[in-house]
Length: 264
Image (cartoon, rainbow, N blue to C red; front, top):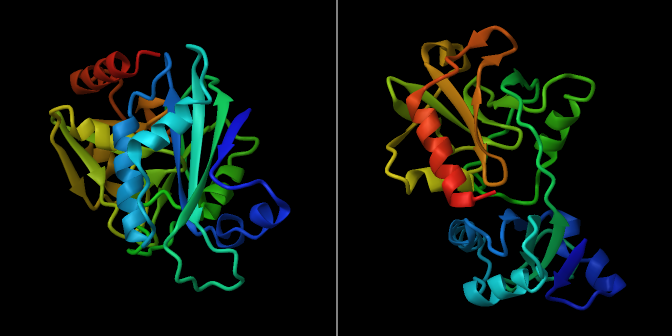
């Protein structure tokens, strides 16, 4: 693993920063392919919007990109994780600082298979409109949900809110298809607004945001899950109780456009 930090690596800086102490920050997980980050602009757009919402200073896009790519010296594929956090080492939840620090890690990309089946997590997502959509550092709900899958054949699970509405999976957004129209769950109270979902909206596909009850899933023709590393995968069933069509033209069209853009 390679890394870069915007701050000196000292015990004080590493142990008293607000990323570790309070999760006061954001992160982006990005795919590097052929010496480039195919979705860099969308990642930075989300990061910049999120920093503003948390009252943190923006970063220079081109300088940040150069820092990331300085770790890459070949055409192999990698996973980059960028963590940005509030720069304040004083103890206590409250902080008047809007300055930021960041660190970058670079790890080899290991392609994983996305299963075509999902289960449903017993853990319900809590609602907090001020954090909805953000990829913030507080991810204990996802940790607990992922731990539920140990020993099971499922690699991912649908996560619901307290009203049994579909929000996302542990690590991906959800796109549902009915009569070739695309629908995705509303993320105005919880959930992460993913970069793959943002990319989809730039490709000429109309995407409708909707409150989606879990009990209504069988009404849809198809289902996809997506994130910026693994792309778009079709789902065939949920716990062998809810089933979807395996071949839909709109799914094939999205997958082909994604592969052409990312060029794995």
